[in-house]
Image: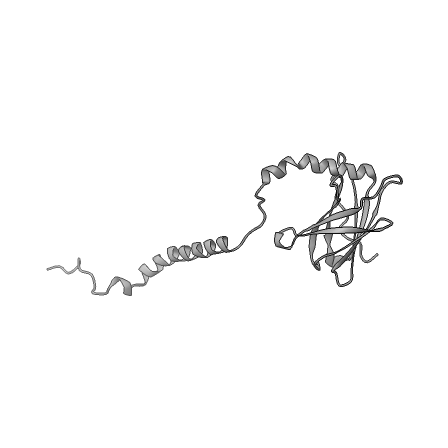
Length: 185
């Protein structure tokens, strides 16, 4: 008889090749489970639930930016205390009345859980103040009057300085974005 058709008596699980071939699919399964866990556990916070409604308000926002430009609105925001107090100095054209109160929205670019909405109360002479949670890093800033007729927007790198100047820009000519920071002036 010819023994060339017989195999040796070793079992398949004692050979290295089946294990090497199974290693790839097993790694993919583990990676898929980890990815699914991270997707369920974390909230990216970048997608808005009412994105369609927000898209419809673009013209309203542009009109409010233009209104701030027409009124000559300018503001300086200054952090005080231990970073938990904010003072805003507001200026407008000569005959324009300043609002009774302001609303300041501070939004983190990627972590919506850190966003703040602060009511700033008038102290007189165009000065407004309010309390906030301490800030670090970069923030999107929106300052508007209490009746939401105008608004100023900008970005603030708080770690670079406690002062932010916001100035309205002609909405037709360019976006209304404030300066990033002024180093301690």
